[in-house]
Image 1 (cartoon, rainbow, N blue to C red):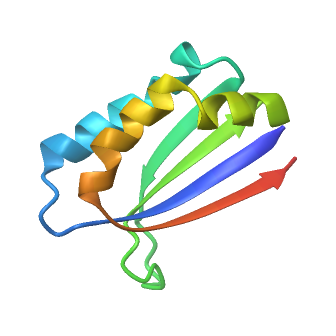
Image 2 (cartoon, rainbow, N blue to C red):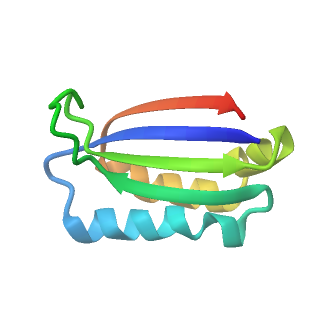
Length: 98
């Protein structure tokens, strides 16, 4: 298994409806893309104030390397990026094997 973590900082101009649409797109990936086993969406609520402006996270689990590759080049991922990019101020991506 591979975990794929996104830490997201949205532009100040990003509207809540747009962010909610993006959330729905991420959460639908396991039903649309083979090899995506699960997706979690979260909003920072840490009291430590160390998030450096990153407010949201996505945790995806891929079955294996093929699942990750399938997602990265899948048309549904491309459609998601079309919604994501205009909202995005900054992003951190980290993958690791379980």
